[in-house]
Length: 502
Image (cartoon, rainbow, N blue to C red; front, side):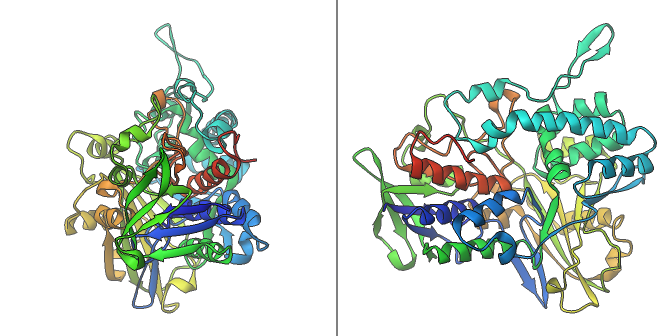
């Protein structure tokens, strides 16, 4: 039985802790804040409750697998997991509206034909076929296996199938999402639909590789899910599963250093909490922290990453979440999620990813309106969450929040008159909860683009030190965090010959 110290109680770290405990190891999690969940938090006030991190769960199979392999109770016995249908209602710049059914390619094709005109659904359906081929090519090496030393192959190889486009006697192939939209979908509304997933992850579709086609494919193939009571309930269930497997948690204990002995990780140094000023010995250390935090924990942290290995991603955007307590109940038939697309696409992208980043004057807004009595004081009120992508480190003014509410009025008519109070959760709040510089939010790992959108390996040059969570392989998002936990547990339990999850 090995002693394992886990730094941080985010979802990826807890996923690793639960699997390692089941394998017979003694696991202790050290968390600098007073609660678990990382970015998966909850805000409550006056009987209203809101998720401040992810609001929906794609690819629930990752957590089904985790719960099956760490105990007798499956995921559905621990949380009330429900499919969201329609998956999303899209409001496009020209006023067109398209509600898309959940996990139904044929249903989506029909809905798009009805909303956008004959042929639109067929073009989207053909794109999904190519996106599935991209998923089949990239899934295992990108998500289910450790990042091997030959990772540059992932950066060089574009898994999105080539579709030749002729123009002026030249043959071109789409290399970015924006080019897929322009050359293959040939409708600005379909292009906006394609690009909205990338934008939600803080990616510029003009430079994001075509391999990002897997992002909308995941939603269409595996569905979109919600946990009743809010996504914080998933973190709660994972925390309780860890406790049931005898994982120990120490809250309010900030790790200030990773101890090395005889050339390998040998424990953690604590400041605060019950173990102030002490060193806790361990045979393995699992760091579920952002790169800047790891840099502080290991002197010369850049040397931790093997020569030629993927470097941490540069500054990623953050998110601004506006929580709205509304008078008046949720109207029957309201979509759980509505995406209000910007009326100025180029202006939004230039503002977000340009030389002087800021909040776009007309942002794309995701509106979540769960049908969940647990989130409101009574049926005469509604809890609504608005989310927009913003630059990391962005200060948010009241006028900036006003612009977001103005955009959301397209989805919620009369919104301004219904607001009892509002609470803005800014990049500074994300930074406080996660330790990421500027509140940056990591994107999922993607192939191609020279490896620019890959994440550092879960193993490091220091034997016994591993990284887990959104800032390491295979990247950000709840499913990817769960996958990283499985990979780290496999590397520790089975050793460096571990070939990936099955």
